[in-house]
Image (tube, rainbow over the protein chains, first blue to last red):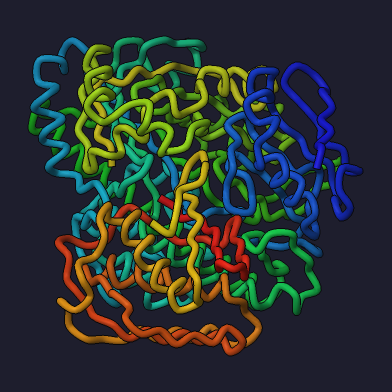
Length: 476
Length: 138
C-alpha cells in the first residue's frame, strides 16, 4: 500500500484517516525530513495505521521520532483509548512491561572518578547481575513475590533493597495500586522469582556518565545537574516475568477478541474492551509486572549505591527520577476541550507531564516531569523536562534512539572486539554480560539520538535540560 | 539449515521450512535453540526421555500452536536450564494439541537471549514446503 504522508510542519506529518478503510483517526508522526526518510519504506508506518483502527482511539495514532517496527503497535507509539468504548492491548505496552530508565546524580566530578573508573566498573559488573539468564540479587517465592508484585519499589525499599526517600522520585510513587498478582500466572512468577535486581540482556545497560552540556541552567540546577558532574543511568525492565505476562494475556485476548466484535489486522494487536473481564485481568497483571520492574530498578539502584560508597564514602547518588517507557495506564486528560479518562498506551514512549500538572509531585511542579532519554551504547543520553505542548499527545514524548539496523547487519558491520576498541578510543570503558550484544548494539545500529531529541523539543513536547556523555558502560 | 534469518531492525525474524508438519515442529525447536543459545542441541539420544504436551484448545491455528511450542521450550530453558529434543511429534491443529516425545538435556546456566517468541508478523504457508515466518524478541 502506498502510504500518503502529509507534512504539517517541519516536525509533524499526518497519515490521513482516508489512507485505509477502518481507520478511526489519522496517524501523527513526529519526524523531520531525515527521520521520515529513514522510515518511509518501513512496515512501522503500516503499524501506525493499524493502531488507528482500534476502537475508542482518540485524537491520533501517534508515533514519536524514535519509531521503529514493533509487535502490533510501533515502538515509539502512543495511543489513548477512551474509557467508554475503548480497549487495552498488550501489544501497546510490549513484552518488557515497564521497561524504563532511572538516573542517579552524584556530587562527584569526572576528575574524581577517572582514577578509579576501571575498578569501579569491575565492582559494579560483579555486583549487578547482567546478561542472558542472569539471576537476581535475591530469590522471591510465594508471598514475598506477590508482595513485590503488589508493592513495587515500595516493597523493595521497605525490605532493605532500596530507600524510602527514593519513592517520591519514582513514577507513581514507585507502586501502581491497580496491580493484581492473582492475574499473574504461576509460569510468569516462576520466571521472575529469581530475577529481582538483575539487568537482563539486549539493549539494557548500566552506565556511568558525566553531565557534558547544560541546555537549560535553571532546570538543570533544579534537577541537581551541573556540567562535569557524574551520573549513573540504569535501563532495564520486568525481565522474564513481564514477558510471560504479555505472552499469557496475548493468548487469552487472541481467543476473546472476536467475541467482543473487534476486527484486528494483526494478531499482535489483540485487545479487549477496558470494562471486560479480559481487559481488567490484563490491566491487573500488567501493573503487577510494572511493579516488578519498579522494584527491580530500585534494587539495582541500591546495589549501585553500595558499590559507589566503597569508593566514595558518603556519596549518596541521589535519584533524579525513574520513569517507564512501556506502559498503559488510565489517566485523566483534557482532549479536544473535554476532560476524560483515557487508557494511554505508551510503547517506547515516555510520559512527560508539563509544569503545573496535577499528577506531578510537589518538587517537580515548577519544572515539569524529568524525562530520561537513554542514548545507544557509546552515544549521549539526555535529560528532558515535560513541556506544555505534550498535551497534544496525552503528555508523551520519545524514549530513546530507536534502531535503524538489524542485529545481524550490525554484527556484519562490527564485531564485539572492534566495538569495544572504538569505545575505548573515545574514552569509554565497557563490560558486557554477553559479548555478542556489544556488536549488535553498535552505535550505528541506532538513530541519532540528538536528532530524535531535537524533534521532540521543536514540537514542544519536552525541553532539553542536559546532555550526558558515557564514561563507562555495563551491557546486559 | 532449513531456516534463514530475515531482516528486522530489533529482533530475530526467521523463516523456517519443512516438508511435513512433524518436521516443522522439530525444525522450530532447532531454530529456537540455535538463536537462543547460539548452538544446536546434541544428538537427542543422549538425553533423558520425556514429553511436552500443549493444549491450546479449539479456535486457534497452526501458526499460533507453533509459537506456543517454542515458548514452551523457552520456559523450560529459562526456569530449569533444560533443553528438549523432540523425536516423535503428534500435532492436531484443529484441536490445538501438540504432543512431542523426545529427550531432555541440561545446559549450563538458565535461559538464552530470546525473551519471547511472538505473534508479531506471524505467517504460515502450507506449501509445499511448509513455511513459518516468526519473530523472536531478544
